[in-house]
Length: 135
Length: 135
DNA sequence: TATTTGTACCGCATTAAGTGGTACACTATG
DNA sequence: CATAGTGTACCACTTAATGCGGTACAAATA
Image (cartoon, rainbow over all chains, first blue to last red; front, side, top):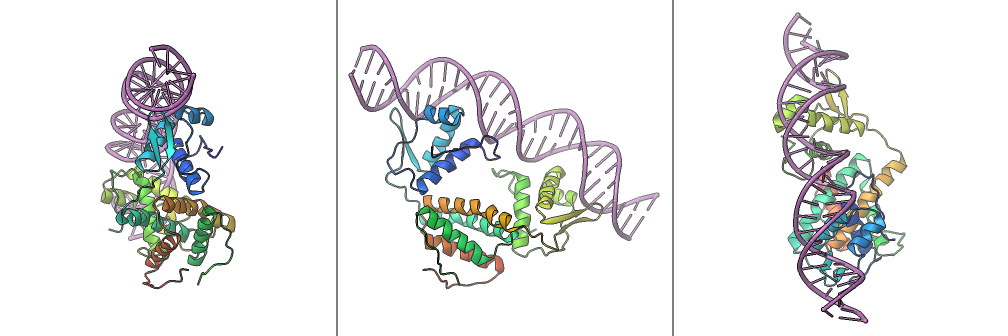
């Protein structure tokens, strides 16, 4: 199963489902157009309530990550929604700054953080670049 | 005032205080050894309950960001706590991957994300580097 | 001694998260 | 047409987190 959740995490379970689906898509574990588990089916699999899955799927649809069709099922979005530049950049600024601050208090040097970032990106793409172009 | 909170945010107010203090330190707005506002004083300033500030300060002390002295006040840590490598790197891995996934779904290209990261780091340090070494 | 500061409780209200259940609407299949 | 599979929409309920308001105590300082 490409989705695991921890009932005792401080992160709400519906949020873990959201993150898990997004992660699986970014990693290519599920392809655009592919069908996701049915709501009751996934709830059974994770031994959580179906309403919790409903909440997660609804949010994923709101973010154009999946498409929900009544009576047929839920599918990974085919034609990716294209957010405008303002949303694209502005939506990330806060998260990027937040990470920079977190790194500061963990005493992570700039180039080290950039290196980790590149490594994470490469992992997402299935590459294995070892060298880099850090200054 | 170097701290602003939004009572109607989905982020808990005590968490906003934590983030705000960390941010102010990372940006150099408050220096190591400097005294933070007294609990009741800050609560009055932000028009929130003193217990909320207590909760935030307690967490900041737990993370070795500030030091609390009964009867004297709270101060930004002088001798920064040095976490071991495992905590330093491992603690960031998850956040970095999370950001990479978020960027993926916003259709942000790798070099664009790296660029934003470098820019954020430079802002924290008060620099103004424009050029970069993106591939 | 008086003031400033942090600490530790208590009770209370509001909200988010999650459970369990039921019923209905739409689609595909036979 | 009937049936199975699916999403949708409620409802009532419990638990935990958040935040407020208040009071009292402890330690440092002037």
